[in-house]
Length: 254
Length: 268
Image (cartoon, rainbow over all chains, first blue to last red; front, side, top):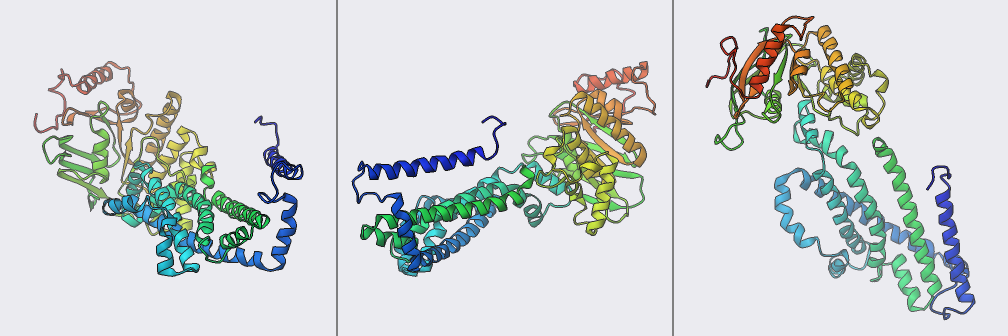
């Protein structure tokens, strides 16, 4: 991109791309290139959405899913971050947990669904558990890697100026120095958690995922797409909000 | 931290028979190092790269514990100051702190209020001519400016002993010259005690009143030269002969003027 173009060029091109996609999609259905029933026409999405809003189901599904999302994200991210930071800072803990991490790390969040149902049932707690596990590892590795990458000389600087104790090092070096990496992990988790929300709810916990499952069993493909777009919107909102906060926290990176 | 003794003695730091080994005494990096630095002295430690000069500074700073011997740092009884402070190679500022907050680092934990810390940090920034950069981030400064902030960060804690670890080694010749002049100006004003590590003989001759040669394996003190009063003519025959002796000592060659030299390494 040449610098003479305005900052609006890219977003504008993005909108044009979306219009082309939806236009081509609508045309292919109107022209009969795609057999009806396999894919809803974009023009049918508006009415389907309005109906869903009027019945109250749309707001209810969002409210349920948002509850799972926020609880799972907060619990998984905080625990993952803390464990990662501590493992990165305390070699003894790092050694003790290295075997445990190796065993548990490859198990995807979804594999825990049987236990989630058994331990917590088909409710908010069960869904929260699955989501928390899937974001835990992202945040764990982001925080762990960020601590490992800290310039060791900075610990010497801190110690020279009276900040040599464990907590003082944590406060003056570890936390601020690892913040960019930790926040990058948090952002990845923000997206991953939405994927896990749907997956966790497909098993019957009420929310967007469960609503999509119901709609697909009734072949209401327009409703499925409405909820797909709802998720995209929710993700865009959370990601934008996060980036605004990140910019404030990491102003020093420029 | 090393033994910190508060008294009125003229000696700021005393090293007694310092030895450092990383393999339980099989081999030594430093051995039999004895050194006394008096208040107001500007001492350069000169030696080849990798000989252990920076390690010696870290032992004095208390960042590395010696395997043998003792370090005693004689702190003045002033409140809200630190006995020793260090200026690092490549400044090593914390990139997430503003320039002012970087200078304040050593003031935190000294029982000062925020306005007091601010005032002292600003005074130090003024001393190095960077008061107008207080609110900037380190990445917005040049290498020379960053190193000046490193000097301010160390001076603001009013150390009895200022340790400098090849602080100008990574700078271009012009910036280095400017910072050397500035350091001498600050030293003349504050009469602080400085221990300056360098592998550059010319830099040692410009800055120091006293030059100590660290050489060998394990490294020990091989010579101790009083460079003389200022203004000083580094091209005078006496100075050139002394510089030549230092050059030979650094290179590990026998010293032709050994009888006149001041030997401290006890094993010789």
